[in-house]
Length: 336
Image (cartoon, rainbow, N blue to C red; front, side):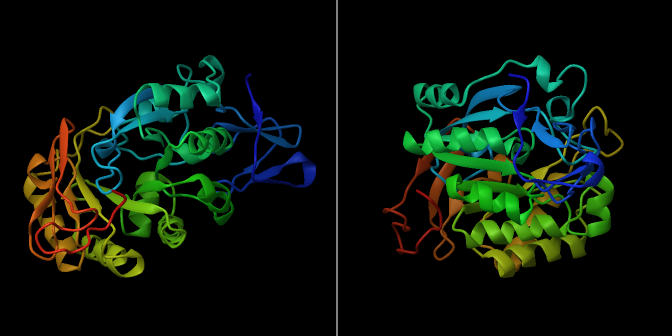
């Protein structure tokens, strides 16, 4: 199988189609592909080139997504097909997300949806994560995997840039259980310059996910001099706290230089701690220094009791009375 009929597109005149999967809404001429390079117009019909063409599969701790308040300590069978609708200049997965001669979808092995679910069960995973690249671009495949996963008692997780249309959300939400959305900047000009996409659709997706009852966590990779200024940090923290919920966890991660983006040094830890403080002052109850081991535990917002202890990705110890703090009874938000 080298192609699969795509969902979410509209036929236009002269054989063109408009892809309505992501907020780019690409107008695609016959024989051409959208910006993601994995959706192609063939004779006025749109096809997914990445259906079942997995470029990565791995068993990860759920904390690696990162999701800290969703089935902590569990494993998640993680898969990715090539393709992305952003062009983040510091992308750490550019070798698998950006289409090139070495990861052209048609050259990759096809994995049937039922094989993914079987592998997840065999690995003792409690969920399947669509991650590493931009999972929404493979929605046709993901929907089939997700439905089978639910039938088998597994949960489904999206790790996404959030650049979705309302149509895409309507399609995916019924089989989605949790999501981590990467908000890469809180200034539209900066967001557009460094990713190629506008900010507002990402924010709209976060609101829609939470409204639909999907467990949501937010990640920001803090890049010095780009997205770590006061107005952006304050604006993003207030957005999460007031437009989403104070219970939405915010993961703030250190940037490390990538081969294609070495002009900026790694984020100093003190900048991460500063951003975490901004989040707490905005009213957020759960703020984490994503890749700083000293900042990954969950403490009760009411009494300060440590209720989840994390030792990297090696071990997670949950100290909860059902979903409540054992010391003061405060309910800790999450799916435990």
